[in-house]
Length: 372
Image 1 (tube, helix red, strand yellow):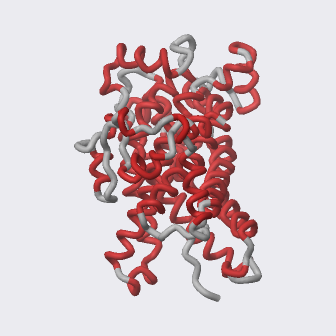
Image 2: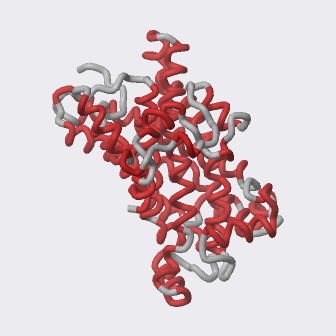
């Protein structure tokens, strides 16, 4: 897909030179909050110098080079090394970028149901109205900001979660971790999502505008400059607070529920220890646990999802205005059925893709499991 072709354009020495120092676009510079978070992992946020890039003859996809390196080393990547975190970052890019892009049609219908419920009266009606007025391609409006925004979010979400989980567990010590591991998962995921949403927010603002305001723009390339012209650069981040309100509880539930569901499945459902399960069986557990976690994620974060959609669609609107207009019941329930179906499937696939990539790179699947 598109995300894979983007990865393929990044050369092999990026893995050894560029990715080992983790240079990032200047929008996430060393003095930004995201850059500071990366600094705690020993990774740098700095512009890429053309002189550091290799020749075309040396070009190899990042993801392939990591997997190949792991194979050459007997499938071993040192846990919690820079290479480990790099693998988690790329797994996060693939899991979030590809899955969110794949469900763009459902997202387009959901956003329009939230913005104009009188016109888009239900799921089937929403699809029908959009296809009738905009053609089938109307269901894919905003796919580019979706791909780029959620790829960036996935990189920080999964990469920083693995880092913060390890950091907080080390701070707590083995005894406290065994007693309060759920709190460690929740704290690690909340910390990671705080920075991930800063990366997502500008793309989310443009995406919602493209999907819900007819004639606003065709996509990111014309939508982004038009958005900035109308609302300024600050307008791209006006939804950051409700985005945190939506995504931080969502991610805490996504990781906390997943980790605990994995443990429960191996303890009560799977008839043998994780160490005796094949990689395919382990990935099946990852998908099932991810889907179950996703249902809870959707319910917890849905009111804030409605707020984000309304704020980005209406210029000058405030959180108070939206709550007054919709009411608390509609805020919590409008579009919820579709979002549960979308987020449950999405979260299951994300954990499946993420863990599949980790396994391909020679790492174990996610989830601390007590011995039977």
